[in-house]
Amino acid sequence: MDFIPAFSSFGHEFYAALSPSFLLVCSSGIILGIIWGAMPALSTTMAMALMIGFSATMNLHTSVMFLLGVYTGSVFGGVISAIFINIPGTPSAVCTMIEGFPLAKKGEGGTALSVAIFSAAFGNMVGILLLVLFFPIIIAIALKFGAWEIFLIAFCGIGLSGLVTSEKEHPLKGWISGWIGVLISLIGLDSINAYPRFTFEITSLYNGVEFIPLLIGLFGLTEVVKVLPQASPYAIPVTLGRIMPPWRKVFGILRKHYKTAIHASWIGAWIGFLPALGSDVAAYSSYVFAKRRASKEEAPKYGKGSYEGIIAAGVAENACIGGDLLPTLTLGIPGSAPAAAYLGALNLHNVVVGPMINFTSPGLVYFHYAALLIANILFIVIAFSICKPTIRLLSVPRQILMPLIVPICVIGAFASTLSMSDVYAMLIFGLIGYLLDKNGTSLVPMCIGFILGPMADLNFRRAVEIFSGQPIWDIFSRPLGDLLILLVLYTYYIGIFKRKKTIPILGE
Image 1 (cartoon, rainbow, N blue to C red):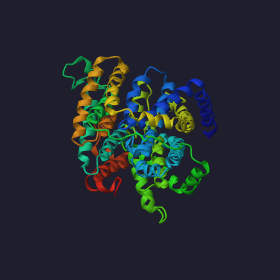
Image 2: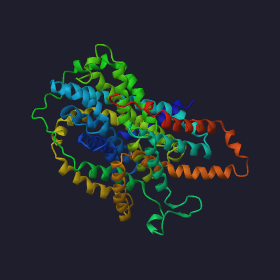
Image 3: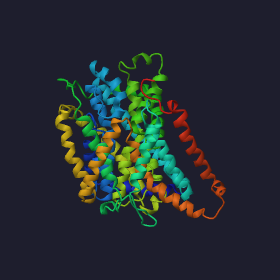
Image 4: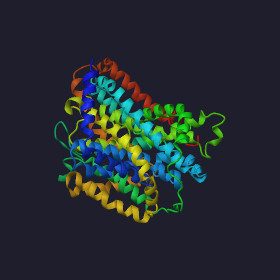
């Protein structure tokens, strides 16, 4: 049995991750992530996108510690502003805002924040556990995939990404966004014959479009242009009250709603595993599920200050992190936009994710387990330590904050390859992202399509060569392929005919 060697490898990587330099880097990432997430309009995706360029100067393991720290901190950070000033720092904190702010007005803001912190830590731990348990299973299945199956997985991923559009919009917009991403990914020399595609004889396009400028443009610059004209009327309360509440009361609340936490952790991890959905959908879905199943005693509290609602949303959005990383590391399909950004960071360090990751990068998966576990422990301590200063920082007006993001966008785009063409590409994608966003089109599918495009292109052409000269029905002789064909058809079927039943949203 492989348990003992695996445990030994994990122990070795965990010991390595405990070095003071790694702990310092991880702590810095968590602090930056919490502060970033707490700032209204600064999302987790933007944080990950902008930090990739800076992580490129680090070695691989330092980069992993730093970015996972940023990821862990920024997912939670939006909760702080949601509870104390009724402004969600990130989209996933909306549900926490609905329940947390009424509690803060009652003088229970410290208790609500403590419950949110421990809920986040529990969600993180469950996400890590599920990542550890299911990683070898998914890897074992993925190793049986050939070129045809990998193409179908990529095709299905693009289809699933289209389902994250607004409930009021047809998923066709999401699919258009996804296939635009695929089209952009095909720019440059093709991977088999080195034939130029869509280069228009522009030399800088022969190497293709880099992922980091696209990501920063879509989720960094677009957000700046979109948010800057908006008014920011919120004000910081003069007195914030006690941040550290009676611990007996906090643990009593957590013990009372432990079943909700368990349900939320599974919902969050499962939604994280599905491509393109992410922590906001996890939080919304878990919150709605908990609200519908609330007891007669708890149901009237929803919307007026329910700790159960905070637990449901907080656990799910953080369990989503482990769920996001599972398909990212095993299949090379990011579970969300932040996971896509993290995948881009791994690509910068020449890490080939997918079924062969244990062979191409030995020990890296176990280092991820260790880094996530350490980040979760550090997160609890840091979250309580910096909450009050972070709330004070929220007084920075958007008119000052957002323009400061622009040079960070430029530096992040330039730092990946030290080329001004990437800066120009970032500006172009910022404009494209703004226009699509104004049209109500989700940008996440474009990001997912850009990542999956080369995978789909290369493996489709390989499959054509493999089945060349054989009858067309031979493609149906592979059971895994047949199952994936049905999954692809079902994905587009539910998008067209059963859209309203796929993703529950707030207020249903």
